Length: 519
Ligand code: XMP
Image (cartoon, rainbow, N blue to C red; front, side, top):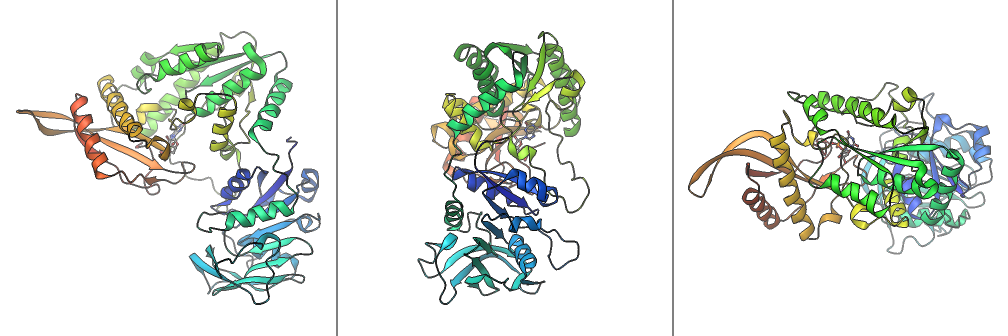
């Protein structure tokens, strides 16, 4: 368990709960998100948070059986901040009133200061321009505040939008301070943690030392294997574990023949040459590409690759005498239990490939040193560990690799063309200084051939699609607004330099409704 001061976020199922955690982590505060129905009075007291935030959520407190916070939240004598549904829960449980419907507000709204309000506590420093811009998303609203509270700010549709009980350090707002569209939201969160007494002890240097100590404690003198994909997460996990236990760690890098240009060499030399980490380079491209022959269904591709990956990993892991642990680069967003109001399992959009299932089958225990981190924190930890920026700043690359950027049947020829086109595209992006502004960029080779004319001759070659998106976590994404000049220059370079492609398109679909990858 972490030794840091901690803040507890009780999740009522809002789409933006994770953003609360991200904002707090940016302020060097360690926080944990727990679903409302897993927090009991007992574990609340054990956890001993220094402050609590109640998130938004889709339910209505006016309905019977709607979610509530354990009453102990309000009896621990720590500051509590209720956001949207969290505000309504607070009012309901502390003696105020909430009314359903008729006054919905979605999107931008402005809060005016209530007459005679005090700009204290978490609202200190607000209203400099006479009003506060905020982002709302609510149907119900508070109509009567609980005893002890006073109104600090009002919006046309939520007269009790900003309220406080300074004596108990209870605060509540109808809007969402955690989203970027509430420009002073960060200031409110900063004020909140300051008054709760957080000292900002969540830094990567302290995290690194603590993680190393925990790995040593868990592993002792036994051995660990780690599947390396060349991506940021598994690379950072491997370097961290190597720093903790040295040569007790062996990495297995499975080359499935679906990597980008020069990727295998870059990964192998980075681990062997820079870090001297024992590494098995498993070239299994024939096996993977052979098994994928004739497969064009996206889910079948993913399942085939996932299964082979486990078989191959197991084969190499068996060669490592005495391995008892499997290391994985699991991140915090993967372990946050999401609150499901539908009760049913969520729909499978894509079967993600990982080495799940392997630990039980092989009797291995898991080492997951990144379980508490968000992606940007993993990058910060990587920097702390001295990984080269060229590695840390890399765009995410999916486990199934180029297979899912080659819709339809995969052939070696198509993969070669795709690799070359992708390398030109990324080179263009780097040359124009755009690489770090973009979350992920790649080329997909399309299963269509089109007619063109080059020189005096007819061509009949593949079309390709360029993709580039901005995103915070890959869950939602927007296409990147390249200039026409950039797109034109890039298309010309790809068509001139890559034999086999005679047409280039730019994919301007956002996610949703599209996904980032093509399959
Ligand atoms: P989608 O296509 O689902 O992608 O919008 C979201 C992010 O996830 C990556 N991705 C994967 N990563 N195994 C991975 O490790 C997978 O099977 C997989 N599928 C998609 C994708 O590259 C993007 O960053």
